Image (cartoon, rainbow, N blue to C red; front, side, top):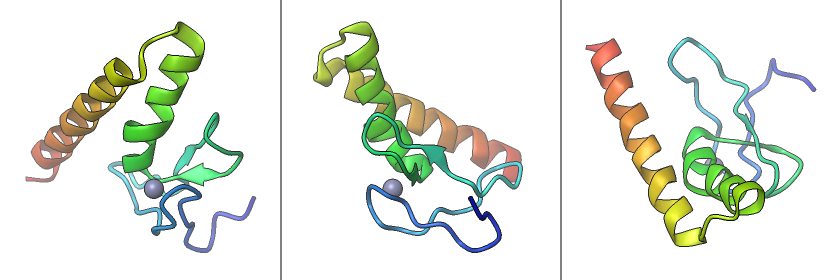
Length: 82
Ligand SMILES: [Zn+2]
């Protein structure tokens, strides 16, 4: 898979941005689909879907955890950047 051009999230169709550390390859979108996804979709959709599928969590619980992870990641990035 080419990583030289900008990647588009396979879930929300937004551009996959560059994350802390310079990684711009996005995330594996399984089990939502076979493509790549952005950090936001990874936290709010992909990880919850994995928790539901692999660990039998309720979707509600899984989405709460996904959002908390997303917020924690944002705080960490803010701290590192500033
Ligand atoms: Zn996305």
